[in-house]
Image (cartoon, rainbow, N blue to C red; front, side, top):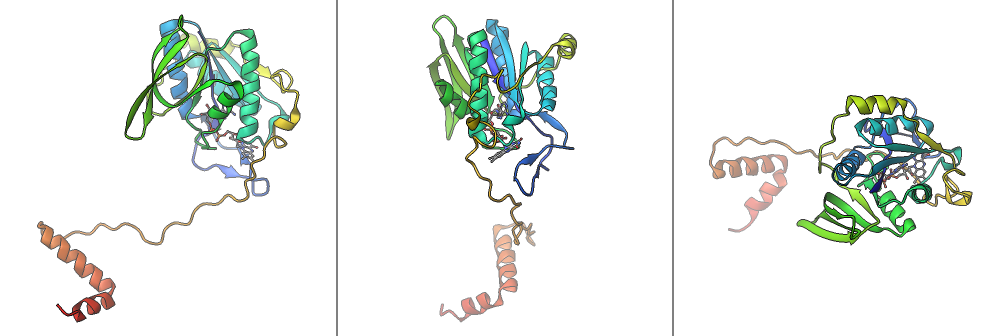
Length: 281
Ligand SMILES: Cc1cc2nc3c(=O)[nH]c(=O)nc-3n(C[C@H](O)[C@H](O)[C@H](O)COP(=O)(O)OP(=O)(O)OC[C@H]3O[C@@H](n4cnc5c(N)ncnc54)[C@H](O)[C@@H]3O)c2cc1C
């Protein structure tokens, strides 16, 4: 079984800086981690490999330093890592990102047929949750979103059953392979890196693909050129003027609490008290 897990290197804080002119994300100086949702996807892929054999390839599109994120995944047990990197990808929106990743997966598939693609539910920086569905659409794969557990894979029958968290409950869905799963958070716990894998990750050659090696000839579909999304403004929302307040009642009874609240309300709004008092009983 060949599983591809798409992982993204993201800034390790909520303090993402945005370029004031281009509105693109500036990564310089911000410590980077593997997008946490993607680790749930990787762990689920590794569990499938433990059960059914095969191999797990981790794939990312990003700047050269994204190699660190791939090496981290190798320490957990991924077998192979591919970094798709080229200046031509700079400024990609989700449409261009899913185009480039889909092309890379097509390339991987030519080498060794891909049965399953995992992505995280979303990233903690871009936060759109669009890239997984975008890849599935481009590769014509069955799409399973918000998956909390892969229940069963029948490799002979090319079928797979998953649990999907939906509003008000859990759906059990079955589909055919190959398919793409976007994995929910908190569904499993990432294993510890083993010493063997740490040594292997340090030595293992990460495959680096530029635009051509990734099988992309049409440059109008990648980078800024292939990105129709325009970020017109980025701003922090203003804090609300009113905040929640803890009010302690004089006594324990509900009547005491009600009286305290009414007194507070009338103190803040004397006109309301006058209007109520003036009403004929
Ligand atoms: C106009 C525009 C310009 C932008 N310019 C830049 C820029 O210059 N630099 C920059 O860093 N970002 C830029 N971005 C943000 C960038 O487009 C998104 O980070 C990227 O498209 C992924 O979207 P997302 O983070 O919302 O991923 P989501 O859709 O939330 O991700 C879902 C899942 O898809 C997978 N995934 C997402 N991205 C990747 C990836 N790159 N490699 C592998 N797997 C992935 C992961 O498994 C992830 O959990 C720009 C966005 C816009 C709209």
